[in-house]
Image: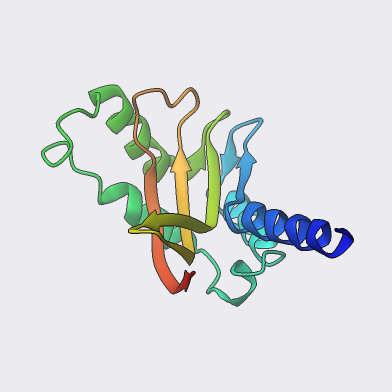
Length: 146
């Protein structure tokens, strides 16, 4: 019984840490250089993030400038303009977040798949109905569990 409980706790802990989303919420307007440095400090402590290339200001700005109203017709003009303002001023406004996801699980045809990923996202405050801006998306590995 004790061994089963320990195994169940270990499995639950690994599942939770695989699905962890780590977030920096900016409590004031923050220069991109400072935001990226804080993000990289947090990422360096993560089991996946420690092996990833550090995020750069140029990468963040490129992701923002890559947003197209033509390709995302549901995006409000005000959100698009707020994103472009971040690129122009090189400042993340109060309330926005930078976060990463290092893994997720998926069940298909009776077999569970566990993915290690490195996804970095920029999100507006109160993001209801607004999509995140994916700054980096990397699939690292997939394990099929019985």
